[in-house]
Structure formats: structure tokens, C-alpha cells
Amino acid sequence: MIKILVDSSSDYELKEIKEKNFEFVPIHITLGNEDYIDGISMGKDEFYEILENSGGFPKTSQPSPQAFLDIFKAAKENKDTLLCILLSSSLSGTCQSAQIAKTMADYDNIHIIDSLAASCMIKILADYACVLAKENIPAGEIVAKVEELRSRVTLFAGLDTLEYLCKGGRLSKSAAAIGELANIKPVITVTKEGSVGILGKCLGKNKAIAQIFKHVQETGADSSFPLYTIYTHGTENCSLLEEKLQENGYAVSQRLQVGATIGAHIGPEAFGVVFVSR
Image (cartoon, rainbow, N blue to C red; front, side, top):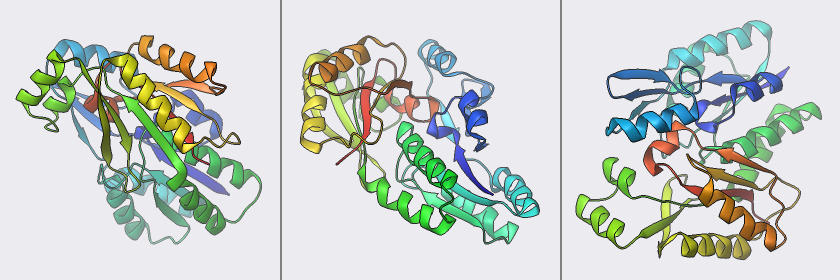
């Protein structure tokens, strides 16, 4: 049997993980003096509320090899094949932990796929792999198809605040202060190499929404795959983006919430879109 494994950076709800019969490895988060298990001991809204009220910056820790090894040993015992679609190696050592566990398990039917992606981008890849598995396509062919698709999975997002880029060390305090005063809203993407890139800095959210829409138009969306809008905490900005998309003929499949792994760096009221390019 072919089974899909994702880590919690994929931002699936636990209910959906169970419905799809996925294997799941959570990422651990330290915020203040408390340790949390992403998606299990702390929900997404709860995370953002703690984030905004604590004044601190959360630390995320990649899953240990042991977290994967327990699942890999069970797969070996059951003679299952595992397709592990994991957070970008440019953002985390999660893939490395999984590779170590695969070596320890000594089982060939484990495939580690570096998504070169994050959050709901991983959902598109994992759902695609799930569909192919149900069609009884061989595991090696599914891996090849997922790796081919990953270069087309696209994210454009606008940030409402510079505070968390600053706290995470991606922006200096002086640059963040000037940016906040000027009402600058960065537009970001996930690059083909799997890292976060800044596409532009817009004056106000309306211009950020316009720039995101422009990038969607220029890239082109493949209508045979879902187009998701995404948000962190607070949906007002996301709703405005949805209106812009729908007014111009884009069908939004679902609105999805970005969780702690990525949300820690972009903060509340972020908004964006995830889709497969043509």
C-alpha cells in the first residue's frame, strides 16, 4: 500500500489528515516559556493570539529522526510504501531528519521528497500524490510526477506588518520602523529553490493586492488544479484579494489558513494565493 506522509508545515487540519489516511509528523514550537506541538497541542488561531500577546518570537525545531523512524519501522513491518513530502530543505532540516531515519530503518520503499515549498503549496503536492496513488500508479512514477509538478506550484503573498520579519532577523529594526511609518506592505513568494523571496514593497495593502493579482495574471493558473487563497490571522485582507480574483474570473477553490511554521515569520493579517502555474 502506498501512503503519504507530511509534516505540520503543510498546514493540513488534523481532521483532513485522518480522512486522507496520511501519516503526520509535527514540528515543535517554543513560544515564551511554553513548548507546543504544531497542529496538535495548539491550534492556528490560538498560536496567533499567543504570538501577538506575548511580544516574543517563536522558535521552531525540526522533527527528530526518531519521530520519522517510528513511522518508517511500522511501514517496513506492514510492507507499505511511504511518500514523504516535506518542508523545503532551504527553510528547515526536516528532510535531513527523514533521510537519517530512512537509513536507520534500512527500508528502500521510503521516498523522501523535498517539496521546495511550504504551507498550502505542500497540500497541492500531497493531494496530487494521493490522487495518483488511488489510480494505482507505481510509487517511482508518482515521485517523478510530484517532483515535476513542484516547480509549477506558486505562492504570492502580502504582509500586513514588518514586525515579524524584524523579530526573525530578516529585516533590521531601523528598516522595519521606516517601513511601518511608510505603510509598506512587502509582497513575497517562495522561489524555485524553496526559499522566501521578496517580489516588491508596496505602499498600502490595496497596491499589494494589485501586485499579487498582476503576478497571478502574468504567471497564469492551471484550472485543472485548485486555486487557494491563504491567510494567517484575520481575514479582511484575504477577502479583498478574493474579490479581486473573482471579479476577474478566477475561481477560488477554498480559503486556507497558514499555520505557525510560516506564520511566525510573516505575522497576522497576511494574505495571498497558492496555485499551479500553466
